[in-house]
Image 1 (cartoon, helix red, strand yellow):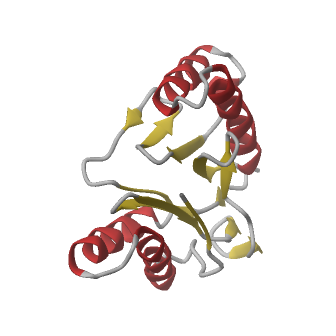
Image 2 (cartoon, rainbow, N blue to C red; image 1 turned 90 degrees about the vertical axis):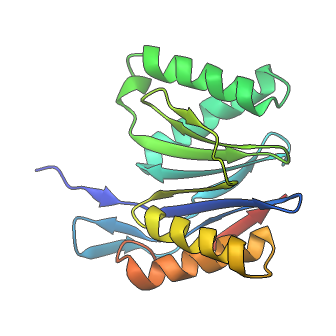
Length: 179
């Protein structure tokens, strides 16, 4: 019997030269059991210059964080080059190909969504959200960015709080990292 885990909501926002990424803390087993309330799904990479968040299996995400950080080291912190090289390896390596996760990565100049399907997406509006409550957080972030006088960190955090009010797989134990 395979048990599915719903493991997150991540929202990243850039505004007025600031960048922030927020993640909730909930890991849900199946449809109705909260396994963990304080998971840390966002982190700093490459000497604190890169922010990253993941949605998907924790083991898969940790593997991808490690691979991505190695690519960042190899390419002197170049976010786009490291992302391209990670996706190449993710799609061609037999073990990595089985990993199920999405990542948002960002530095002071850009942000990307990275998937194992070979997708590297740079958003048009400096907002990306992934995970079970991702669409709720994305909608909230877009509205807040357009109509509220909040900075990137405040928008990312408020968007997660709104998603937590709607999505049963998202809680309000939020961790925010900012550049």
